Length: 331
Image (cartoon, rainbow, N blue to C red; front, side, top):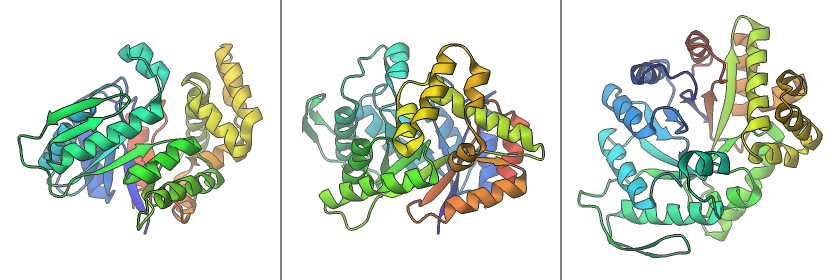
């Protein structure tokens, strides 16, 4: 059965307490996990610790913690600690993010994101085992690190985000799960073959789980719901580097992906938003009345390649609209 989960908002973060309240509401409504991204708002570790302390059953996780903003050893320590404070409810989601975030915000050379992600997963796994870490890689050379506290039992799962074939294959080989974003229903099924190939290369008994993050707006005002999801999609295609644009192009929407990007870069944001037609919007996201949105979300959950759907929110959504969507799409 597909897990229905909650992706706490990037934009609507008026306070730590508001994020805690969203997670508590998610728990009451039956969502299985609350994910928190770490971008330019509040740090994920403090917020997730607060959530863990004020909830009992809902899982928590990072989606996504960038592998450039913390060392692998610190990420391992953090995962071990969050697993402890949540009584075993934590899942670590990692990803390289992009050069706009890594270089402009953190001042770190982006380098080879696949190699850094792979080495980070390797080291985090060693840290979580409780054994002394000995690692000789291209990015990291570690010797002698070991947790001074007891290793978490069980160790938290480690997931990896990815869009391109090699990134998804990496998740299949080295991680416990894959976080997918900005995929159509056909696109996520096509990319799942790369996950399967990675699992086969690692001789795994099972293919790592796929968590699909979906931008959702379920509102009585249908046009408002579709407008804010369309705007959110155009923002990511037009302003957040090349990865989202390239991913959409690989899925057969190259002309639209480039048109949105070019219009956005020229400052024609309205034109960029208008380039995203209804058919494409409906294949990428969940947007409409509560009844329509529930039907759309159910269609995603019927996809064999998807193990969990994560209800995410457009950046223009108000707290009231987030609450309405969370309630409308509750399990």
